[in-house]
Amino acid sequence: MSAGAQTGTISTRVPARLDRLPWSRFHWRVVIGLGGVWVLDGLEVTMVGNVSSRLTEKGSGIHLTPADIGVAAAFYIAGACLGALFFGHLTDRFGRRNLFILTLAVYLTATVATAFAFAPWYFFIARFLTGSGIGGEYAAINSAIDELIPARVRGRVDLVINGTYWLGSAAGAGGALVLLDTSNFPADIGWRLSFGIGAIFGIFVLLVRRNVPESPRWLFIHGRDREAEQIVHDIEASVERETGRPLPAPRGRPLKVRQRQTISFLEIARVAFTLYPRRAILGLALFVGQAFLYNGVTFNLGTLLSGFYDVGAGTVPLFYVMWALSNFFGPLVLGRLFDTVGRKPMIALSYIGSAVVAVVLAILFVTQAGGVWGFIGVLAATFFLASAGASAAYLTVSEIFPMETRALAIAFFYALGTAIGGISGPLLFGQLIESGERVQVMWSFLIGAVVMALAGGVELWLGVAAEQRPLEELALPLTVADAEAHDEAQ
Image (cartoon, rainbow, N blue to C red; front, side, top):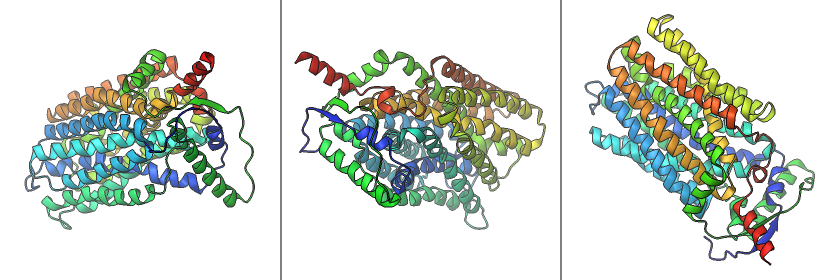
């Protein structure tokens, strides 16, 4: 907290002023500086998938079994879950900007440490710490993005930003394609250099991120309204210089809030589960659904291609590139429909539609029809839809809870949903792949389809029509209720 923070009851138009801004260079700076985390996550998660077959070979410098790859994935996800909770609470308490700088530093340190792994236990610990940094990023970044992007385009921007995860996957796979080629680098060196790609890009993101301001919404809640007003004034001035014309007046009445410097963890938890229980069920269902299918396939695709389609370790990244790009195009193509057609129908379509195609994928896999190219083609179609749904899970929990709880809500539902689906998925896929039986692996795809379909059904039942609506309309800040209660007591 700033030493100069003063708390009281204030009226502010900051949210309305931010929502009426036209798209500008400032918003591009937010997208690049904050959205870069998803590129990093894509690099990290698929990096293990890209190099997994190499790590199980003799001469790699570290001996891991296919089951160990699943364990490493579970450690990464466990770190991400705990990091999300720990850093998510700090994000709501100490600000978005402080934490999205700290969590990126944790990620950079841990991913470099992974490159020096010499034994399974060291590799597992390095993956856990890397995951904790990425998990903390989810909470800090998604809350900041939604609080800085205008309401009318929030859905498509959020989905495309989250979809850039797959650009990171494609970049990591493309780099691994060169680095895993033993004619370029020895077998025990190339995979280590692969992890360096993430660290290099992370440094670039850190440099851009230094120019992204603190969320004005967070500032005025925590007694720093003068700072919030100054930041918004500076943004408005830059937009007017860029467009060459004055901005329209903000719409609606001022928001009246009673500022507080701290809000307890217990109060945040109470809000999520007693004030919004239906939304809590919705958030959990969406995260469990996407986490099981995504993490199960992503962490184990390399060993699956090598073990069942005889794809060489050096060629695996080529298939990852094609699969990753199909995932990126899902949110890119469908994203605008989440702001026009609406959240509920599009989220349900993406979840249930991907489940239907995943059943086709399971049949194709067990019958071996179409070979490896047929498998990759249907896998790409499955995740074209699933990637839009997965991105929408983060968007949903970021929108439908009060501002003071936003970062922790993202962290909580990510952590709990991913702990249930994201750890069990890789472990199940890893064990079934190690069995060497196609029928066994088929069941993992079918289970993933069922989980995704159930999540889509929950969206149809409990989904919120959040398209183009201000965040404060979807869920009033807790401090607004404080201000009303304070006025009634006077």
